[in-house]
Image (cartoon, rainbow, N blue to C red; front, top):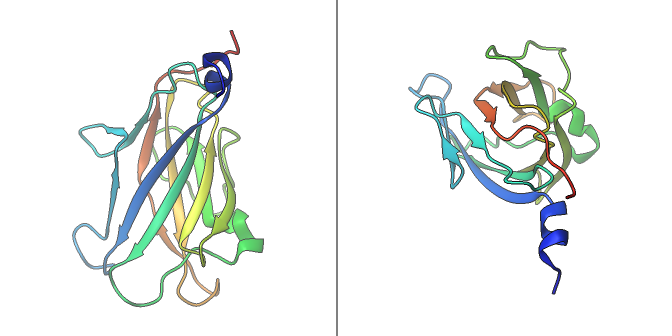
Length: 153
């Protein structure tokens, strides 16, 4: 059994459910998780000495239109992220602290690494498709990194 030191070196494993509704619905999507959320619905990441988070975003297509994350070899297209409080524009890429790692389970789960090294608000867009990447629909919730840096001591 790994000791406390080993546990503090590993990232938290977090599941987040993403429910997608019709684009004209209010709201057009909903995020649910056991992570703390702010009054605005942003996920709040408290690493408590661990090396950040591995987040499994589980996509639930409530529209029955076939929304999925991009093809696994196009993981870079599944996420845009940036520090701050505004939606990341198309083409902005990924903030080095919040990056897509892989797409699994028949493209229904996106695994994202949040290093949580900087105490700051950030914004991200989950990019989903129903036509294998010809077009994308952006879901753009926000997040807060609360602990900032982590250490091995």
